[in-house]
Image (cartoon, rainbow, N blue to C red; front, side, top):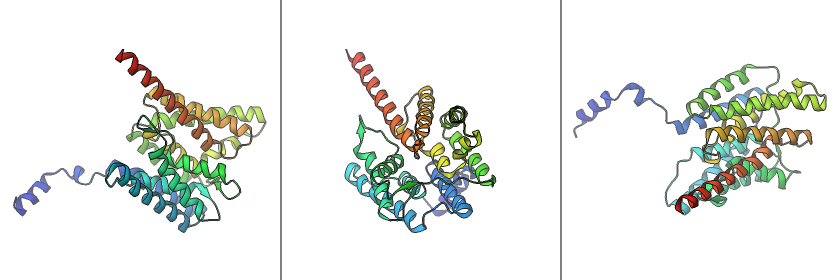
Length: 278
């Protein structure tokens, strides 16, 4: 094919197709935007070096395990999301928790599998393991946006558009509605101002949680109805943990409920296949 033919063919491609962004890279770009806005306005990062370490550790682990298990180089957008999530959500004066959490996050996708499906959202798994095993060294991000609402509004609008395009908006919407309903209930039980119960969802940690962790296609059940039911129970368990003064309630709630729902679905699918076979 001549150069003129190639040039002519490229010109025939619609402008929209030539400049269309691959959906796999939308989430990494958005999560990077959350990081930049959050750090510029409120200094949410422990340090750039620690976040970079978390990202590099996740990417290297993905590259190595991808070659070992699948004999190929995998797309690294998922590893980048896991690494940057660890870098944003983890707080520690040491460097090693960032690397270890990222490595554990990626390894969980390859090791903790049932019927070919991994059970935990990777970054949720890595962060929760570190929070549980090293509470004296590791904490989670707890910064809110304060009284400056524009970062919150911009991120939630963009996040909603992205999740809508990914056809996962029902998951985020169900969780947010459940969070507010349970916030009213917590306020009634504890006597705390309802504004105080609403406050956590204004933080960057919840943006990552709502738009990335609970909507992860690989670690959510298949049925749209049950996806909504599962995140309702995530919010319910979170409420119980908050009432018991558990600081990392949303992360632990997803850690407990998400894999349980996946295991139930896998078990029921196996039962149906056996029934059909007989």
